[in-house]
Image (cartoon, rainbow, N blue to C red; front, top):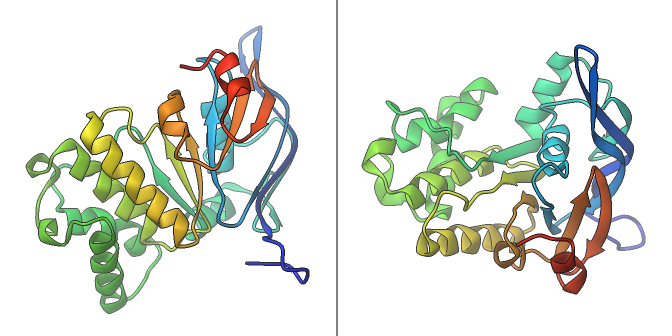
Length: 244
């Protein structure tokens, strides 16, 4: 996706976003005026120490939460103030999620888990089948279509979760610590898939605490105390921010 001057267009644009969590007389400011632009086909890692606001930011980007104030434009559409029905529809059409815990349905097969977002979107059965099989093939699981999660390794389960995220052809894939529960071999496999997906044109925003994992992204955004303190290629400024 490019503008008339040949530049990649923005998929995510947030400006002066704040998030305050309230409980009784307490008010905790999780985000304090964050601005961020992510362009088509970027691979961005969000890093920061525990409590820095990175998970809160990802929740807002995924329309799972809404900002207390500020603007959020997703593929050109202002979404910060939309009602929950509109937000749900946009999530199903625009966003693919990959979580640290794979969140697969235990008694459903890999096929059924990947198919679920298309069922919710009322995609016809024949089209669902072709898209599910294509997504599972993309993550190297064509031979695991009928397997339940308990019959899959941790890495295979995460690959099913990635296929589920990709099957909706999202504008952006949001990944929250996608390798956090995996051994090193499975983690490398998952990161290789994300790199390949990104190379094919998908936009990826990934939260991670690991500098080694973040090195797979082309750009790193470092949060501290709810604000962006560094934004660019991974380097000394990121490591100096206290992320390990």
